[in-house]
Image (cartoon, rainbow, N blue to C red; front, side):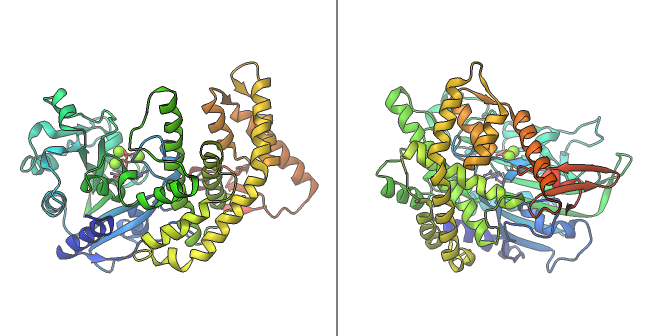
Length: 491
Ligand code: ATP
Ligand code: MG
Ligand code: MG
Ligand code: MG
């Protein structure tokens, strides 16, 4: 089944269960000071859960473009190194706003996976919340009893508060979650560890696909819980992971979501992407492994950057724009170093993406020219200084006596050659070095202080003002958490 059909099956299935299909919200959020990018399906429905607005229907289904590159959910460092965390991904979700609850939601999920998509029941296992006395939250007996109808008890895993309890904040709506995982190991591998299934052991082929959150309680200021007057369901399933399971492959990159992009990179570079193997051995294997990682990074990052630009977030030097620029520069450098791409080429992937995704996400088609041009310009501009910057970094490494590179040196790379701090840190890590990040931040602060002194009115610097506690420059690397503390105000 093609990915397009997997998405459609999901929407159709929940439509047949009385859900209204709604479009994805933009990936870039302009009116939510707590979040830089949309990082889950629920973000656009927050006001419904808080009771501040009324949904068009109390059953909704959608697929949401998500970006997990900042704040609480930051998967950037995993991308390319595993085969199922992306920067940008689609989150399929079905929603009940004060309508159905666990005894409908879990059977819906099971029916969809096993009857519509016909996934092998024996490869699925589920988790339920184990309870936490200290935090005053009970074991989710109800979910456990529902799952017992479908799943043998030894494949119902009890999960802790970190993985299986969702809270919007210290106060407010919260509740247990129940996840569905899939075990994609070969039969032989599974037989070798017969008996229990792997339980959250981070085996690369045992992957979480769906999270069902039950907003059941309200946490009050004193920490106690009360039942919410209306209970809600919020689910999120990784679309690319689901496609992996449906298409019977063991890597998201082997699905038709990524294959056309990978083919294009192969065509441009003359290199080959090989299988889903995470680590290949031997010198040749190591070389190929680097190529595979670089290709995964590039085809992942181009989606994030392209969709962000299509939704109106151009790369820039501040805030969300700088996050996008950093992602793109990371991809450019992976190409430059491991695929030997010395000319702009990532922009050529936009046409492939538009062909492939344009039908469902028309913005990528209507903005195709803009997205292509912006990416090409960004590539050309960073490539002008990349080589020199990398040479400087080589010199710095050879002059470093210990294993930590001085922050001031990395700042020079940032300031003169446009190397984002995290990119320098990444390259250093590859070479077995670390970066003195605090030193980098100090150098950055000093430069800010100098430029503030030089001009009274600054047009590009930002400060976070907290009533009664004025914090100064938050830096180009400001995260969602920084922004969360208060509104940003120009000074
Ligand atoms: P994981 O434990 O794998 O990091 P998660 O628990 O952080 O996932 P949730 O916040 O529960 O993820 O999001 C719901 C679903 O979205 C997950 O079950 C998974 O299928 C998918 N998902 C989450 N993060 C990513 C990502 N970075 N790339 C692709 N899919 C993702
Ligand atoms: Mg995660
Ligand atoms: Mg998880
Ligand atoms: Mg989860």
